[in-house]
Length: 81
Image 1 (cartoon, rainbow, N blue to C red):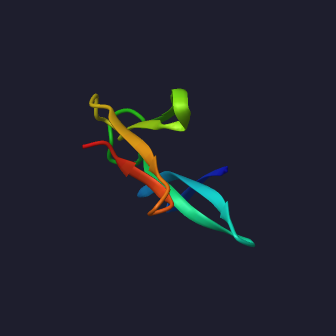
Image 2: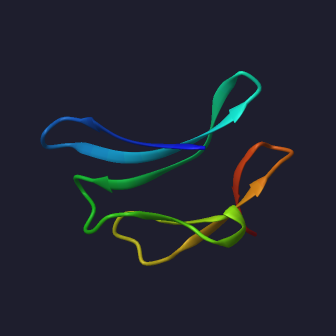
Image 3: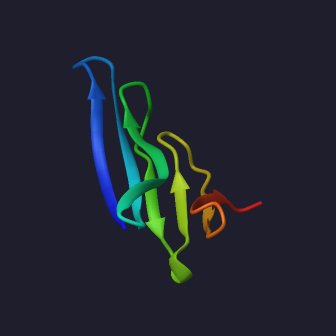
């Protein structure tokens, strides 16, 4: 897997995202994307990898953590119900 952080927008209105890509066949597919920071939020977002390869995401300015698990059939990370 490859994680890519990128920022888009202008000096006053911007956002930073994290995209995770996984290799499938001969290419890469985006399997997760979450916002890490933006010009309007108080605080930053976080993405953690936890045991068994699952991830936990917290959006900018939010204290709640959202767990995601790998779904092989869909070939991406999906929210844990």
